[in-house]
Length: 106
Length: 111
Image 1 (spheres, rainbow over the protein chains, first blue to last red):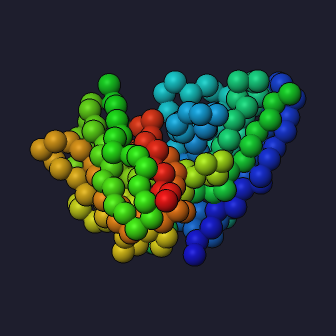
Image 2 (tube, one colour):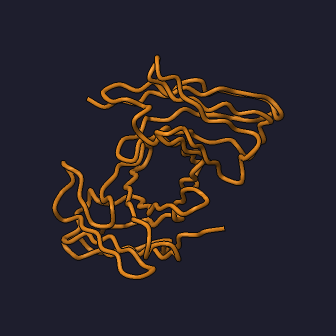
């Protein structure tokens, strides 16, 4: 079955750049989406269609995709960005989430 | 304002059934592709099912043959009929448009 692979954890200091990767064989042909989930809350879309940012999402969040890898970049990470991040994409068999990456900012 | 409100969760015995509902406002369910996503306690997100605007439906292998997604256009509501429930189906179930999610409803399968 199709898999999206993310690193389990990423850690940065406040003000540094955090990069979270997501690899999947269908990503050259399918869009990647990124969700932020803080403890006890529903997920929030932070990037859609590889690199577009929904209204209300800070400009420090950006996305890119090249080949089989999509990347979420948080430039100048803030303490409030500490959360779990999930990539999401589709293929012919349905939709899929990556396993999630816990971002620690301290 | 877009809102999604799930209901119907609860405690059910293994082998039992539940129907989840997701009442939408601020947009038309039938014009969007709508998904159910679940999250077991302490685990990551798992896609469960999708219904496209044209009516096509797809399911994760883990629920195929047991769960059915549907919608009622007159009520602007999405449903998930869950049969033959297993302990491993225990999770918070979210309904979601790609850009908006509900707050989820907890399903607990236990004897």
